[in-house]
Image (cartoon, rainbow, N blue to C red; front, side, top):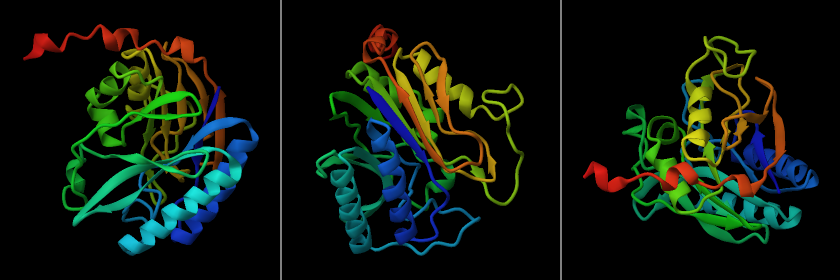
Length: 262
């Protein structure tokens, strides 16, 4: 089966973000993908100093999610849409999962916040597994996937064939331009992607924004650590890769012995 990662530009507004979701989800569906994932907090956009964003209301976020459901149903493709979200009085960073029929299957919260995010969101407390089009997958969001490999191992041990990893790394204002995937002088992010796949024997699909100065790019990593597809740096678009779910055995993850660690 095929999976897709969408690398949009930073949204100027919720409306602009939904326009990009519509375009990129259609592109992924036309290439035969069963699911497409977008970058971290894409609706309304990650709170960077690079961009000025207004905090969205619960009503605005619900309307946006409803629109994503319509896009998914129209294109018959499952969509992972990371967004800000209110759960009661708690403001959270989550990734909503919408089926190809336009049904909300639930969300994965960001449970391990970056220290810089402690004043932005409330961390979640649960991990979830999802299924769409016969594909079992988990989700880990940015910092927790890069720094807390346990978040990926949990999903692999529960039977995930892929873990999707929406993230944001880089800037539109300043930084160093990368030209070679996994270069030894590049930041560690792409090496971490490779390790999350290898150490669990599953696919790892990490997706970020198209930015002027990216520190990593959207990448699909096979269970043996091979990067089978990645988006050109700084370019918006969709990458689609065919994966062999039989190779996503979770073999190494399932050999883990948690009882040895108390």
